[in-house]
Image 1 (cartoon, rainbow, N blue to C red):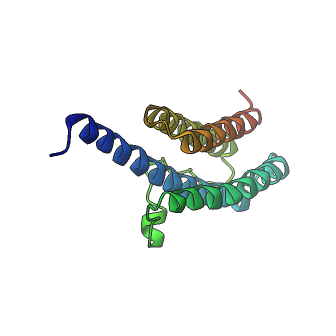
Image 2 (image 1 turned 90 degrees about the horizontal axis):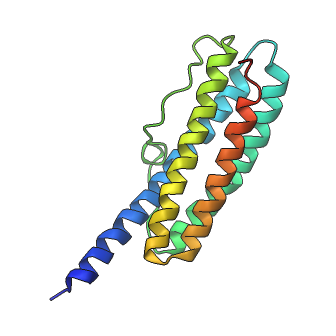
Length: 158
């Protein structure tokens, strides 16, 4: 018979690692949103946002591989389809009117912040489990996404 303590730890482990896989999905989704802004934003802020989003998506591309490899090192499966890999409930970036720079930049910054919060939640879960490697990864990614939201918000007029 499995002890209650072992069962609780097992549930916490499952929850933590499910959250880790969802952070990979959310990262991929936000990476793709960043590419769309990079390609699609028009107007007076085009060049500065084009340059900034390129820096962001290049960093995120490397990070996606690090996250996926960490998941695999835990002997956990990564998503097997494009649909599964990009499943996220992060709000869409309003690119229908590519000249609405403030709304586009604001939403992308908010999504960066939301992902930072999700990594912060992951860090707390990993700390509870004593999983230092997942904790370190979560803190590093959370810090990166907080920086990205700050850089994007610095380009807003208000």
